[in-house]
Length: 152
Image (cartoon, rainbow, N blue to C red; front, top):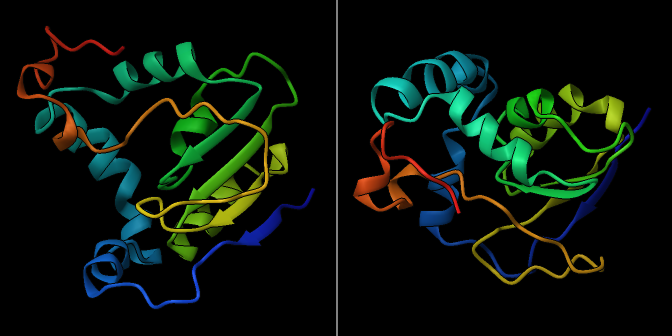
């Protein structure tokens, strides 16, 4: 099983802010990511445990799915697709995240898109429904409580 790679980076250089924002995700930090972010941080800091996020993803994942900001691929590896052979796209600027997620999800033969999600993206695909932003800080404060947490 192989992945298809498509590089959609613009020809202009990225700002220092963009470079810095994605540079923290190295092989070393990603090796610790599932435990510290998904296991500890989501539960204790964001008050939204990963199983809660997986329930949300299971309601919104599709058989034609593009995941933006892929991390380690944990969420897609654990969610329940509505089909055994989903068409899966992974989009991230960080090549290390894309490599790790693509290896983890190789059974789905994902198409890999390297691009900055903060810029316009033209991937030459039919309309895609984006379902989540992986930034808990972007949620209104009332959504950080586990008891009050709701997704749209």
